[in-house]
Image (tube, rainbow, N blue to C red):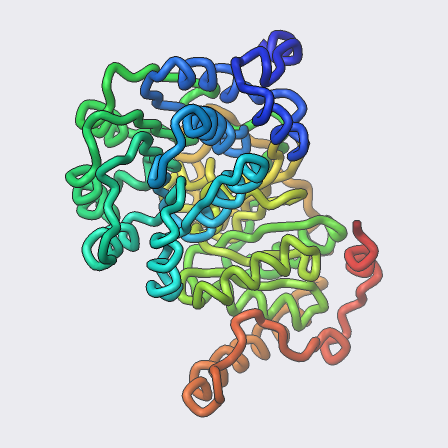
Length: 439
């Protein structure tokens, strides 16, 4: 299949000259597997259920056919793309705008945490493409005068499995009730659930199912390992791995929002350039953190699963599961932040005695027994005193931040960017100094 794909070009798939040029400008020289299999089917006017590994070019697979169809019959409110997270919605809109820059495509992004009036003004300009989170789209359909999707031609559910869980069910139902039944519908996801099949019966017409991946797979270029550790030494092992892999751009996943802030403070105290992102932060601060990470100002992003879905952050070298996800499918999405678009990457899961059952479920899901990440416990425990002190200072800072938030104008920054305590703690930065010369 790989050889077959190398012979294919976007032009071979039936993509018109303007969009082939746009792909070339974006650096998309050859189509990915999901694009090879889905674009010709989409151009025939079929509904699609696409299952592909995260990082495999799903956005291009639905954006290119939509833009080609838009060129043939231009109209406002031509397509609506639904996304489970704000960051993913913004990213999808950016890709539509980049692909459609030469043909004057207008997009509107409707997400929470942003002023509705500004979004209403954008809708008043009658964009071709609306990219939205379901709740905010329902808000606008209910409250923004003159806005409707009655003429919609395309509906896309990206990360469809997540959109079909209980959190979004009511909003999705409301949207389906007010858009035309005569339309093209695309469902894309890295993981497939029974709920996706349920929606398939509800609103897709004779869809083509395209599996460019096995049911719950990870890419071959991803090196996956685990590290079994006592719970009380988990922080030490995290610091050890980050030090050993210094120079890497890393995403560290935790289970809770509070843990992201605490770990970011702790790692900064030890001289690492870490920044948190979580659902408790304002949208402005979330995007600010993401942009600092993308720009290389910080090379460690501490995040909850808010960052596990679809975000295409170039050059993430490593994903660390500081907390093992309780839902095995979240593992597939998390580790998909690295080894994207044919690049290599590393995923390391730090497993303690209480998380073993969840970890075994992950191995069962992906159908692989993963190798152990090599560590020397005596070396790891040399860090114990400094890590404990860094964590104590971080806990104090988090408490002060919570207590003093009302007293400070504008509140505490959520980027963990306070004083670097590394000198106070005496942690040598012989390895981590490499991080500053990267890129």
